[in-house]
Picture 1 (cartoon, helix red, strand yellow):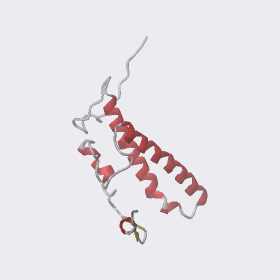
Picture 2 (cartoon, rainbow, N blue to C red):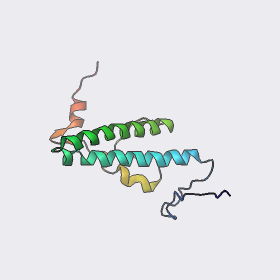
Picture 3 (cartoon, helix red, strand yellow):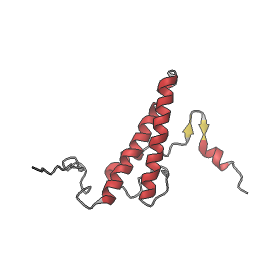
Picture 4 (cartoon, rainbow, N blue to C red):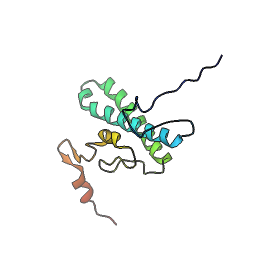
Amino acid sequence: MSREHSFDFTVEGAFPGFAFAAGQYATLQMLAQVVEDLGVRAYLGQIAALATDKTALNTAVAILTVKGRHAAEVRRLRGAKGWISGNSRGDLPAFAQAVYDGEDNVQQGTVNVASLASGHRQR
């Protein structure tokens, strides 16, 4: 006896306009991008908290790099650049914006990384 199972990617309508049905591979790719980007931000956000535990820090950094590669590859599969530009969610639905809020931060510790890039001479 076979029973068909389905998963409600709209979370019972909490994400209106975000449907997933058989044959909607593009929608699955969009969802994968949001999940991978969220994972990257979650691990990155905990790096400082793990600084005193070298074993945990090394594990988290290893996972972070894999999550980053996954996120970049999902973006490329969708025909986009492999990185986030500012805090733009691109063509993702509005509910995904919370994942990207804060991505336009250019301050890393005491260094403004945007000033480093602007100070680099191109040849």
